[in-house]
Image (tube, rainbow, N blue to C red):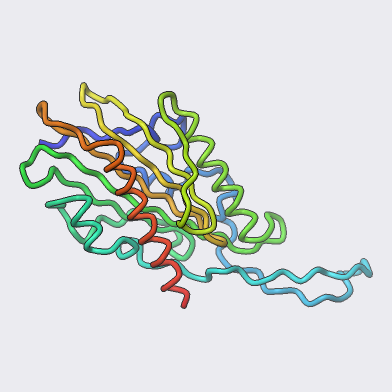
Length: 239
């Protein structure tokens, strides 16, 4: 049987309130326009010239690195999903609801393993930011969101943050254990920054009915593998 899902990031006040992390982040974990929701279109680069009635040159804004997101359920390869979530209920993934697929996308996979007692949950969320005159460049907004998510996740008691190399421009892994309904799961979340996009991957595992949990190293390496897939899929979608 599958246990009710509630992992550490759900405990990070306000970050998660739904059964699926990706759905919450996509539905509006951030407030106002700071999460890029008001920046659905990239602002065109303004040529240097007189500002409107001010006589001040208008600075040119460089185009954002990424103009599109990959299909969220294809952001993690089928081989990675099979390795991390054996016997997934839906190998193709469950798409998270998004009000703007051009700027936000998410997908999740869950299953109880080959023996029915090894719970696994994997999710990927991608959030793209566009240039905005009020909010700043897409890269600046993404950097702010990256720092915010790392700070919130790392503030959860019992969880620790570690810098990760080789994933995007910058990445952080936040790992720990959480107990819900007498079931303790091993959890890891990788937050990665690549240009104007923030990628968040969460991977959790627990042995049910007294079965042994996956090791912390196994869960961490699994989350990092999925995050690398997602960053590669992002690059491919914009090639």
